[in-house]
Amino acid sequence: MTRAAVYARFSTELQNEKSTDDQIALCRAHAARQGFDIVATYEDKARSGASVFGRDGLMHLMDAAREHMFEVVLVEALDRLSRDMENLAGIHKRLSFLGIQIHAVHDGMADAILVGIRGLVGQMQREDGAKKVRRGMMGIIRDGRHAGGRAYGYRPVAGQWGELEILENEASVIRRIFELYATGRPPREIAGDLNKEGIVPPRGTKWNASTINGNAQRGSGLIFSLISSMSGASSGTRFEW
View 1 (cartoon, helix red, strand yellow):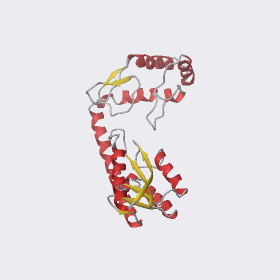
View 2: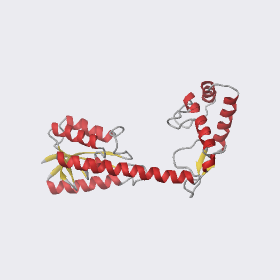
View 3: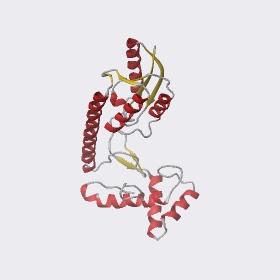
View 4: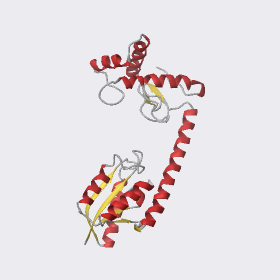
């Protein structure tokens, strides 16, 4: 029998955790009809199809392909492999070079034409979805609510999406940082003091100068966040500590 590997992926943490299980079950049923012998399954949970980076399941599949462990890669649809034209074409090219076919349950065996069409459609849908998400976030921000992500010093209000309330133990750290910064203490020294006292940082395991200073291009850091919140107060976005 032809040896096949199944690959499954879903995009975000908001999707059903069992999505990959459903994809794999669908592929197994298709393999039984086609006479394929499933020898391995690979999956990536909460991983975007816009890039191959951070997708360990896909990387393990490609490593196994180079070892010629199977002759077919089976997916529910080609956009599970990638929703980027270049990446999908590259995956197809590498597997084809190794003599491995890609079969999609809904599309059949992938060739260059199908890969080109599905890659174009997948990328257009992804980009269109991203524009709609940004538009929705802009509306949330105009309403004075939080558009998502971890905001140090705050916690979400249960049952009120986009509403935040002050988390006092973290807010006191923020006030202290501002007071020290206003006296002329450099961020590196402030971060060192916080680390010595074992105060948990917003991310990672320790405070850094960049955690406090921030980066204007990325919109990160406590100092930059303060400047942004003050400049955004007229539009309804306001943060208090």
